[in-house]
Length: 345
Image (cartoon, rainbow, N blue to C red; front, side, top):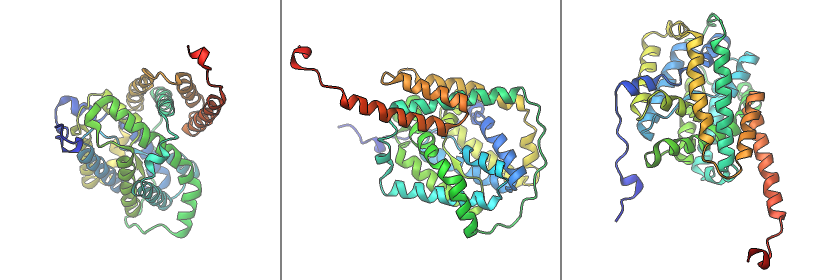
């Protein structure tokens, strides 16, 4: 009799040169967002690293994969553009955490997944990959100096009612569909592509619950809201990570850096050259685009979604186009007359 999947041994946690290089595979995504939010929004640099590292370590131990942890990028871009305070970001973390936790506990994650078919998921991955490539090239040729960090408060108070309202309208509503698409369904798909049966814990429900709990804790502690981005898994994998040892090491490093050097962590990360960060985005971006290979159903739809992502630089437009096109194609297929017996013969 075959053992039940969860009764089988979990993938081992390994440490070695490949895991060490893979640990830094996604730094190109994290560093620019972290630097911008600390400088503009006043996030506490040390505490933010400690919380981010704790989620990295916890995800590594539970999923037993090089599970990525990334900032919520659409949310971060809006926060930086609007110079929103750290308390509003914390409120957004509470909202995202509460919604994802409720969806997971209520069993609605799989129900929502019917909209995120394999062509939609592959289209999101293609769009993410092209956005990573273009963002990386911009960083390679940029010469931006690290901005001075804003004054971050030592103490933290829970968000106000105004923070909760602003966060819901400006940050959470634009971010939530992208989080479901790229950080729940797409990362589950990527994990199966790379690790097969070893990714059995990386189900959409578990991913949503992981993000829900993590963001509730981060929001309560005043940190940076996070996701498990599918491009991040390709980044860790592409640079050598084959086990949870890579992301566990990264998590412990961030915790140590944020706890031991809270006043210098920001400048330390800012010392990484922009061209290096850019190069570390281009390679996984190309690998992520190539995940579309093997898709037999509606490949043109996935490629069109990728092109829209590249042109607009906005995954919201990519997802909206994909869902709308899928609806039109489904309606057209439903109205197509079935072949007669003579035609089938």
